[in-house]
Amino acid sequence: MKKILIASIILVATQAFGQKETFDLATYASPKGWKKDVTEAAVQFVHQDSARGTYCIIMLLKSLPGTSVSKDNFDTAWSTIVKGMVKPTANPEMQPSAVEDGWELQSGTAPFDNDGEKGVVLLVTATRNKKMVNALILTNSDAYEKNITDFLGSITLKKPVSTPPQPGKEIQNANTEKKITTAAPSKFAFTTTNFDDGWTSVEKADWVEVTKGTSKVLLHYPTNGFKPANTDPDVMCSAAWNYLVAPRYSNIQNYKVGPGVLDYERPYYAEATLTDNASGATVFVVLFKKGTGWMEFVLPSRKAFVETFGVDISKIDYYVDSEVWDPLKRMANYNRFAVAPADFTGKWTNNFSNNTYYANVYTGLSAGMSTYSSSQVFEFFSGSKYKWNLVAANSYGGASQFASAKGAGTFKVPNNWQIYFTDIEGKPKTYNAYFSCIKGGRLLWIDGEAYGRE
Image 1: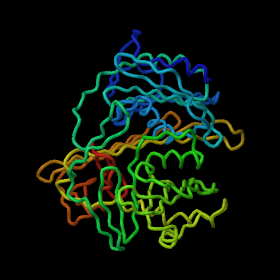
Image 2: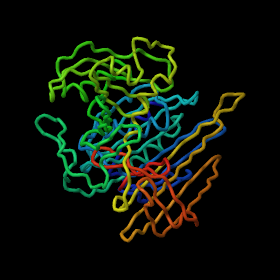
Image 3: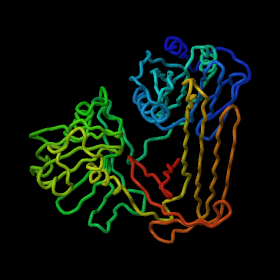
Image 4: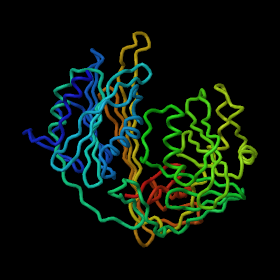
């Protein structure tokens, strides 16, 4: 099965096909007889043979912002898209990169095992002008070889529109390949939050800086700047430490990595005593990640860290309760900033997709698969006007159900942490709302759901 999938990676081919359809930047030919679902985020084709227990899912996803480095884009898509849908049991087996019509192609395959449902996942990522287009295939049989080959071979991609570099965006140094950030004033009304418990958060170029007394925590923004060889704690911590921490310190002493811990959400922990190059002070630094982004804790001493957060790795073993890490995890909640009416202007989107695989409890054979996807869009205009749209699709056993809802009217901000709409599904509604910072932008959270600005 893997051999067939690897052999089928042909994107942006010159081969002639029948009637073509268009989705985002891609033109393609649909596989005949397959169930088709289209959302704002992707076009998906599904074929299933219940008698043989075989299936194949082909997804062509909407183009996304990326970097100019095609392998970085592939790694990002693998970590977010592939691992968000299945559980690969190995790192992707990469194929030689190629260039077709200005698009640089990266592709890789890996086996996956979702609670006994085994198969192979193939990801093809095309990169051009800091845009990436991803094609994803999931299957448990080589019977779909020709369908996969024909579909990938039918795809042609348009040239994405280039946008000039903007202040505050990441730029690349051609000599050193080191990322450089040009600081620019924030376009949002609030860049500082003073919390009731004494912590203060300030938006910075590469992190949110959270302080209270002599304690400082840097909530690093997500980055693809380092690529650990695997997910072992010592390997992950070393790669993250060298990229995020080491450049700003010297004279490292007593570097230690936290013990392996039995937990569904693996904790990554490293600590050391260092000299802060900016101030010359000796500080104790902890780098931590557990279901969050990387967080850097900076305190005057190890004793001060243990007293403040209650975490002492010398007393932690393999069987420690997961809650021991909660005081560190909670710091991620301080990436939170108030909202103002002028901050909303533009389009904010939220996309979600999920597949559920079923197995016969008696035979263990495949009992089918269900898919769910949804897309929400808030678009804000001048004059406090807005439009809202929700589209959702659910399919199982060859049948599909679709739902949609719309709203439009005016909005207002009754306070810095809420937003009021005159019409959501026919009723006025008030939601809790706030921003969190990412590199060069923000996410808008409305009652717990994150929306990114397009």
